[in-house]
Length: 425
Image (cartoon, rainbow, N blue to C red; front, side, top):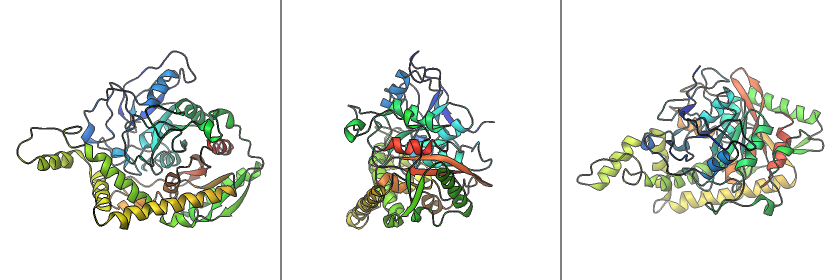
């Protein structure tokens, strides 16, 4: 069965030797690949072919990986279902008739369907962890700065990270080892060793959770679907049986995290997508008369409804008279979220929650109700606001489909969440 997991299927061969030799790694279609189209799931970039490779693509090729193609995604990463793609929705191989999650739904679906060994996605507010949860695979959102964003088409620069999706925690950790590390092309990257860590992530996937102290934020469990909550607690009990313990922690700020996230993300998107005007990038044409009208025409034809909605809301939030009312308050809330996470992680080794508060939605269910889609991100967006690492591992299934367990660690604490996650997957 075809799940429409790919936008472009063109093999990119890596070196003959390397840690990923003989394995395939699909790449989300907002990550630049020299000579191979990079569309971001948008008509605006339907004919765009990058002249260079993203840093993570260079590292994949150097490691011997074969890239089988570019995976489908919500347009410019804006969505939770991979239904806003200009190239059609992706199906969920693990839950027939339901969405694969988003925006990296093509990457997760390709892994779940066995169409690639592993894949890369990008995570701005949960876009790796959500599809990993919905498709029953593993996804890691790294600490901000661990992986280079050079060559990633920007949606919201201060929030997004590239990360791995794989069938198991160990395989995801192996892929993370390859793509992590500082990059001279990205000044936001940091050397993990300077933060007291290292890059030996795969060795951490030893499943040893004896003595692990898990903090469970009640705010991220209450209100979740009943079947999701039951599956979550079953997974916690499994970790307990292997020697871990848990206690409840408070994250009062997460009540406002979704609002803060969308104000910040949409504001940054408004700025980033201004370049797509039909002159520098996008759908060009013969310009006659009023340039503003021609720009508007290019953007009207090139952008989908969800992208237009977010650009307009972001422009409004940044406009004169509203910057302090919305954007500044959102940044204040972001600082509050980060402080709450830091305090909670002072009392625990990792934090745990359901990755998504709901099981995979039926195809088409959330398209007519954007608010439903935005609120579904309530457990994942706070992690991006705090710039922390998180992993989603399969926790079990409900009648509606797979459920993911999210484990959150301190900054550059990838080894902690990998070790905890490997006890389950």
